[in-house]
Length: 73
Image (cartoon, rainbow, N blue to C red; front, side, top):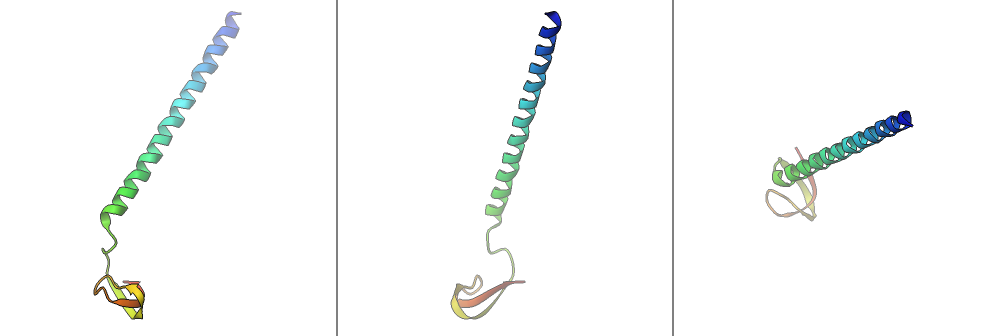
């Protein structure tokens, strides 16, 4: 009876540690994703150099004219 009680306590402790570890890993993944999103939003879209070609329906980031192609250099 005493042996059964010790084994039950041991397995309960192992399961609790596994759950705590999984929760901690999940929180870290969410934090990394949130920081990546914040950095992407903060950097903006007009941070590079562009070469605009042709006449079309796209707005060139430099001159705000309508172009067919935008190539980032």
